[in-house]
Image 1 (cartoon, rainbow, N blue to C red):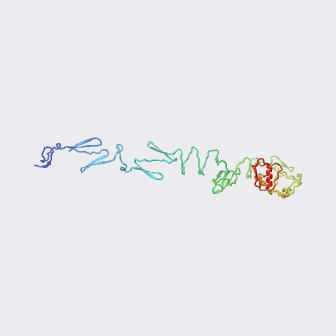
Image 2: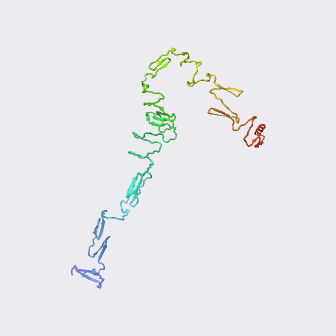
Length: 419
């Protein structure tokens, strides 16, 4: 028998176990002797089975490929198209990047996927609002800036601008102000400071100033060494004002004066001087014969004695008159027994005895009176009735008169007698 293959088979039927020989091409159907002759397999959806002898094909779906080699099936995961494939429950550890790193002007931190990244603003400086997957970062209605603020472009303030501090520096090329009035020294209830506009001149010279001089109660302009930080009564050197003036002028005036005074060549009305008419157009000559009383004329260039002349003090000022030039240059003070002169310009002093007489002076008035407690060192004589307002009188011998009906005169007399 050609191609004989011995086979040892054990059957579960009543057939006796033994050896059998088969030739090539012979078949034995043993499916009836198997308890299971197929494999059932199931996927995420659906199931099927493959009988013995059939081929079980493991096919890859979207983004999955398979390969079979050496009795091994390898399933490979390729590129997943997220537009058509949903991937869930992937932990952060399976991701190459699972956090977001963020940094500020100073400091940095990170937030992992699943954590909350909070964007917070500084109180009264920045506010943040998160809604509808949008974070809005802006300024609050009232902004407080704790440090310096630098604005590189234009700044427009539609409301009032209040600046609290010691110095406000404006470093612009030109400053324009639409207000009709500028109020300096605002808010003071009383003022002791000079107030005005100070112009810095650097090394050119002292600063220029146009100011109200509070101590003089006048306007002034000139130069000063004062700066904007100075207060009080400033030292101002009077400067020169070049301008057209109207009104009264006090002080020296240098330059041309316009108006009638600048063009006038004669007095509007001529005046007679010692009988000669003078209108200002030419000099006049006055002869001694033009003067009616040459002997009574005192010349400014000579020393003369005025005799029998009356000087009206209301229209003339006399000064530097010494006591020696006065017929009476002192006041005589007398107590009835002794006299003493007090020269003009000297001091007349009134002095009272202690506990007996007190003297006060106020605004040129001398008041002489008794002190609150009077001490009489010698006798006291009372010619009339004497009333004593006291609950009792104590005498030097230690006795006390307290009777309300006692004679006040008697009490005084007894006090004097015991004293």
